Length: 129
Image 1 (cartoon, rainbow, N blue to C red):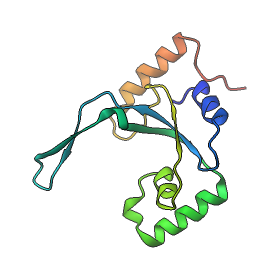
Image 2: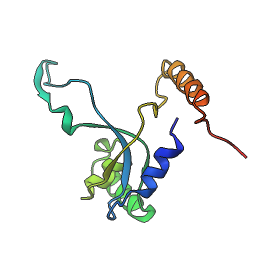
Image 3: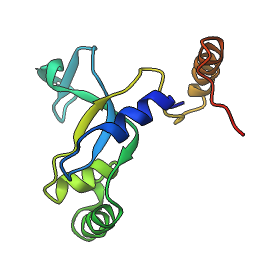
Image 4: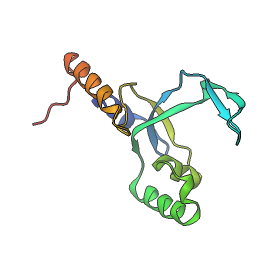
């Protein structure tokens, strides 16, 4: 559900070699839990972003970071950016739109349909030639 304007913003961003990802600042109150599922802390949402796709990295650097992560601690890698982070990179966060959702569970499909219809009504639908 990524918008072309978000892809362009990602491509236009000066990543200084560490790559960049589309992301969205978190607006919810985020709680950190302990092992007993009790609140350990309330995190500062001004410092927390939700990762979106796509993520943009130099192919060789991403390949090497993924190989290293798979060897060292595969459970710690949740996306491409986390592999680069484990290799010492600090990818940039590029603000993307909230309707750039991932389809993870069946319930996401209804929301995706809603967003796709809204994008089509706004003239933002992808045009395939």
